Every structure is written in C-alpha cells, then in structure tokens.
Image 1 (tube, rainbow over the protein chains, first blue to last red):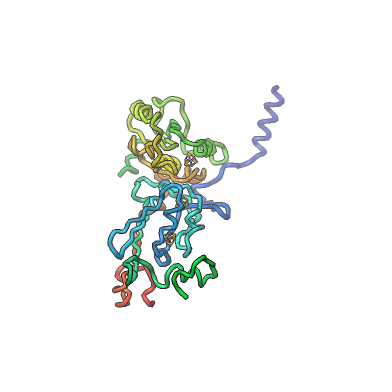
Image 2 (cartoon, protein in one colour):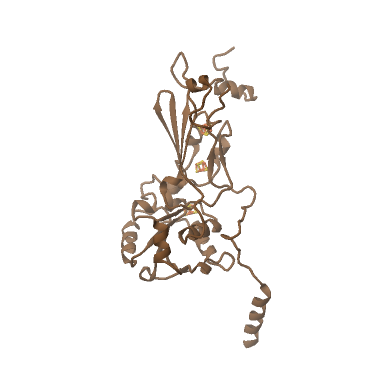
Length: 150
Length: 171
Ligand code: SF4
Ligand code: SF4
Ligand code: SF4
C-alpha cells in the first residue's frame, strides 16, 4: 500500500513537465483543422450556394438593392463542417486554421460582404460576366441542356 | 472597461459553475479536457465548483432548451455578484445548428447576459484556454467584425477604389 504510493510519487517526479505552455507559447492546430471562416471579397459572386447548404444558417443573403447583394456570415453559430468551402464554385469561402476566436462582443462574430451584381439586360436578374454556366462549361462540367446556347 | 473591472474584481481565481443547457456533450468533454494536467486551467485559478453559490463564473454550454431556460435564469440569480457568464461552443454562442429549432431558444445570450463568447464546435481546449486568458487580461482579442465590399461598375470604370480591397480595378 505505502510502497505503491511511493512508486506513484516517483513516477510523478520522473514525468517532468506535462502542461502545455499554451497561452504563453503559440500552438498550431493539426493540418486539416477547420477554424474560423474567411471570405474573399474579390472572388465571391453572390450565388448563395454556401447559404443554401449551411446547416447552421450562418450565411444570410439579402438583396439590399437591385445591384447589391449583402451576405452576412454570423459565424458565432458555425459548426465548422466545411460544406460552404466544398460547394463554393469560386473558392471564395475558406475555413482557416484560426481557432483563437474568443471575444466579448457578439458583433465581432459577423462578416458582412456587399457583392456588386451585374444585371441581365433581358430579365433584370443579376449575374457577373461570364455567367456561372459559361464558367462551369469552361471548367469542363457537363450539364443537360446547353443553357439556350448553340 | 469590462477587462479592467474583471482584473479588479477577480484578481486571483475564477471559480466556475458549469451549466449544460442541452449540449451534445462535445463541449462538456472539452471543458473537462481543459482542467486536466495537460491543459491545466487550474494554473489560472480556474476550478469547477458544485454549487452556483460558490461560483464567480457560469460556464454555459448548449443552445438553451426551452425546458432549461427558467432554471438557467434562476441559476444566474444564485451566483453572488460580481459574476461573469461564459458561453462556450457554437451552441451557447448563437444556437449552433439548432438556432431556429422549436425547442431551443438559440444561445445563452437570449436568456442571460453573456460576457465572453468562445465559439467552436466543440472549441479546441486551446480555444477555451484563450477565452479564459482573455477574461483574465493575459492575451489580446484576435477577432473583429468585418465589413467587405466590392466596387460597383462605375467605380471599376473610373479605375479608382474608394474602399480598398474588393475586385481588381483592371477588368
Ligand atoms: S462551415 Fe458549415 S456551418 Fe460553418 S459557415 Fe460553412 S457550411 Fe455553415
Ligand atoms: S462565397 Fe462562394 S458559394 Fe457563397 S455566395 Fe460567394 S461565390 Fe457563392
Ligand atoms: S457547440 Fe457543437 S460540440 Fe458544443 S454542444 Fe453544440 S453541437 Fe455539441
């Protein structure tokens, strides 16, 4: 009984330091870690695909004006599933490895992006040239119809 | 302001009462992880206590179900002032994937005032430690709200960007 306690004490002495020096020294997450989302304003064209698949409803799309679409990313409730990154045709949304996201203000957990949309001359709907369909065709996607083109 | 108040009110130790308000147990396991010798939140004086009357901090995990909301309010009343509320996990910060479900209220701040948010699903133990260190004033906050904007076609045609960033000015 006593011997086993002594042995335990010896093991503890032999173990040395086990505690991470974390807040004092930085610690990178493992590769592939999914952290806070990041949006590239240069690439996003406002298709709303990410908003469609997001299980937590992080991404809210609002057509604020005829040519302006506002995307709001309320990432406080993001579940870091990575679906938005998977479906984004432009690679505009990305999950970074940033995990140090603690904050004292809820406003810090919102990303607002105003996307400028070009309107179609015929129907008035917005698209950026070239159209998403043309881009997908150029990228080698095969789709059913020819989208009204020859 | 809040930070200075914290430093004055809690110079040494924060005793934490952990309230699970419908979490899936992911966050709870990470909270326990933080208290192990490897992450060792106890070096900052963090200790779990068994009663809210002994606590300085309420740590909320989970999206606050309808059932538990009155209990959570009463729990906060039982904590002696000054008190802090930590919301740990995406559920407690904003409701997580259940934010609009019929049976949850969608986040701790719908019920009680929250002082610190630690998002993540679940947050890494390091992220929780970062939140603790932030509350103790040991580290700086690393996130901020972002407002991004693309240029309109007129601005592109003028070749100027009043807003910095956005699309490249040359088409
Ligand atoms: S990672 Fe998942 S939960 Fe987070 S914004 Fe993307 S789709 Fe939504
Ligand atoms: S981030 Fe990607 S998926 Fe989401 S609206 Fe922009 S282009 Fe579409
Ligand atoms: S934030 Fe994620 S891990 Fe934490 S309780 Fe909610 S679903 Fe579970």
